[in-house]
Image (cartoon, rainbow, N blue to C red; front, side, top):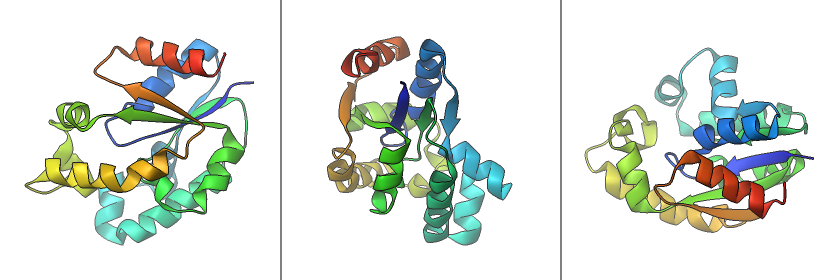
Length: 167
């Protein structure tokens, strides 16, 4: 049974890899950020601006709890690992897979979109990204499986996940 939950930093490819993996496995794809936006009727930057990060994290946890543990690939927000209470929920939904992208890969991928990301909307966003990664790395490493993401093709990452999970 393919029940996979993708974890990792913004820019690690959770949504892109998740869609491709779901298509490969012929299961639904879910994205907690999209579900949160739909539920609140606002884009994530607006949610952060209006309500702040703590409220965002509470809504994120609520969305996570609302999901059924079905055969699916679920992409999560990068900070979902910050709340300890989310870990039992993540595991309830499936096998957790950490997409481990190195800082230089993340910086390259986020170069054009950093201003749209609430936690990076500042002058020295590269340093902030590195700081967030260092803080979250021990949490991400709690995942069941780690797949290193270099600057590879999406299909290579999908293949590695399929191989690691014996799917």
